[in-house]
Length: 129
Image (cartoon, rainbow, N blue to C red; front, side, top):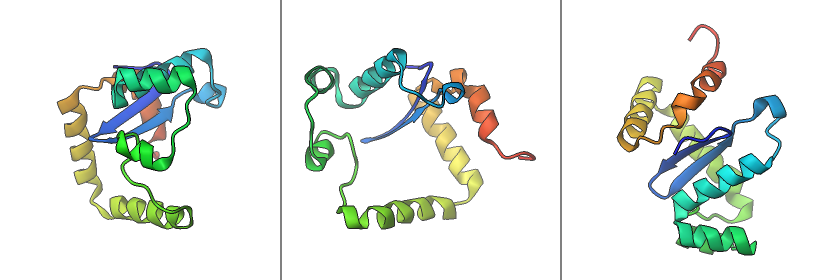
């Protein structure tokens, strides 16, 4: 589902949500909160998303992992190291291959968020690329 204020990239049990209100410094609004709730429902299913959103229930890392909200749980003292390892692994891959894979995934699953965010994405590209 395309969103106006949220970019949602999903891969298996992993989702990356990017707030897309740069003109408002990504401040949380009712509309943005609604989009986050909708995206959450897409990721973990409507029933569970309703329960979490309506009840305000907090879940721990193991439960978030069990329901597919996160793909890995690491001790807090290893978090930065693990995040950097993932980032470095991705950064070492050839840029063309990363772009091709991302394009294939987006086209395959037709998430549609890029149509509404094309201009925003173009602003992220370094000049000359």
